[in-house]
Image (cartoon, rainbow, N blue to C red; front, top):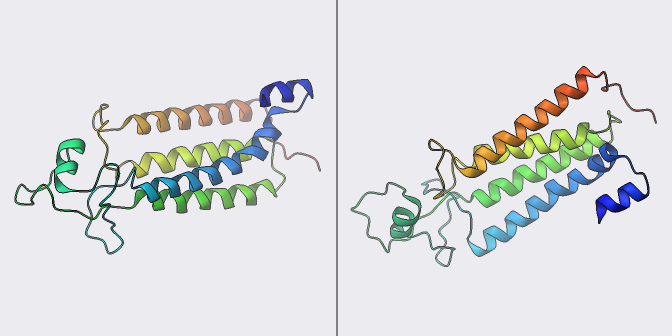
Length: 178
């Protein structure tokens, strides 16, 4: 529907993406709060003081679940029903996505070349997800120890860098007029 309206009204794609992508970062932050509230997408076990146990998580953060479902090496001396504290990666992602949102708003007010805000937001979200995956309790490390989300993040980042390089080569990085 959005693409149809943009085409019908002849709205330029890059300025529209610049206007929309800060909301993407904000929506991602809010979505991760939902993940935290239901105990989903948490991290690996931690002894840090802000580690959180999810007794009603998806699944619960018991030693047995972390061993069996996520192949996390937990000493066999720890009983399967022991509830463990884990990294609250959902909150890490919320904080980082809020910072990206704020940075995107700051960039948007700078009057940069159309597309700069969108490409920056996509790149920063891809980098954020790539690194947070190292802390996540995941069962999809199929790519030499990397998760599917990390592979997608690298692909998105390479695509963004390729587009930015292409646009730079075409001399399209002059500041936009007011």
